[in-house]
Image 1 (cartoon, rainbow, N blue to C red):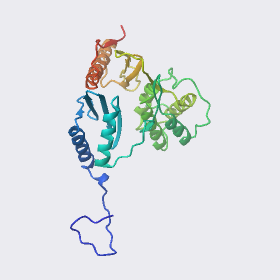
Image 2: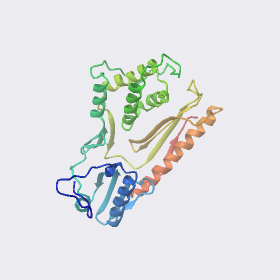
Image 3: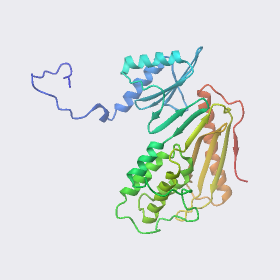
Image 4: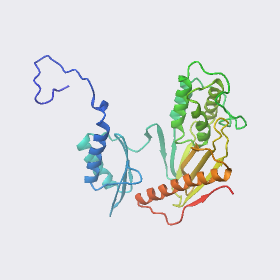
Length: 310
C-alpha cells in the first residue's frame, strides 16, 4: 500500500487499512456516476427504461453496453466502435477483456448461427452437489400440484438456515428456468417458519432439476419483432391468506423474454376482479417492453397482443 500524498511515513512503517473503498456507503453511487459520465462523454445514451443499459447509434451500426456494478457486456454490429470503447475503458479503468461472452454472473451463454442459448448448468450442478442431490433419482414435475402447502403443515424445522439457503439459491435460478417460477414463489412464502413439508417440497425441485440441469432459454436468429403476452391466475389458492396467484409471460417472436408468478397484494372478492388485476400488471410490463425496444432502436411495428382467460 502506498501512503497518500501529504502523509509522512517513516521508513519501515505501514498503514493499517480500516475500510476498503468497496466498503464505503457512497462507493457504488460514485462509481456509477463516474462510469456513466465516461460513457455519455463517448456518445452513449442511458436508456430511460433501464438505467443499466447504454446504447449508441451511428452510421456504422449499433452498440449496446449492459452494466452490472463493474461488469460490462458489450453487444452490437459495429465492431469498430466495440474495439474503440474497449480501448478507452481500458485506458480509464484498466478493464480485463475476456473475449466472447460465455459466462456472466452465473449464466452460461452458447452462441451459434441458429441463435443464442442461455442456461445455468454449472449453477444447478453446484446446488445439487452442495445439498447432496447430485446422485438423486430425477422426477418429471417440480411440485405436487394436488397438495396445498400451508403455514402450519408439518413440524417446524429446528434450524431454518438450510431451507432459506436452498430457496434463496433457487430464486436466482428462476432467471433462466421459468418452469420452476410458480413452485419457488410458493416456497418463498414460508421463510419465517419453514417445516419439514416445505423442505420436502424444496427437495422435490432439486430432483426435478436433476432431470435436465442444462435446460434454459433459446433465442433464435430468425425470430420476428412482434411481442405477444399471456396472463392467467389461480384464484384464492393460498389457504393461509386467500390471495390469488398472478402469472404472465411475454414472447418476442418465439423467444420467451419476460415472465412472473406472484401472489396478489390484496384479497380479490371475485375471480373477475383478480383477472383485471393480473391484466393491469401484464399491461404495465407490456408498456415497459415497448419502451425498451424503442431504446434499443427497434420500435415495434405491430401492437402488443395480450391474451387472458375469458
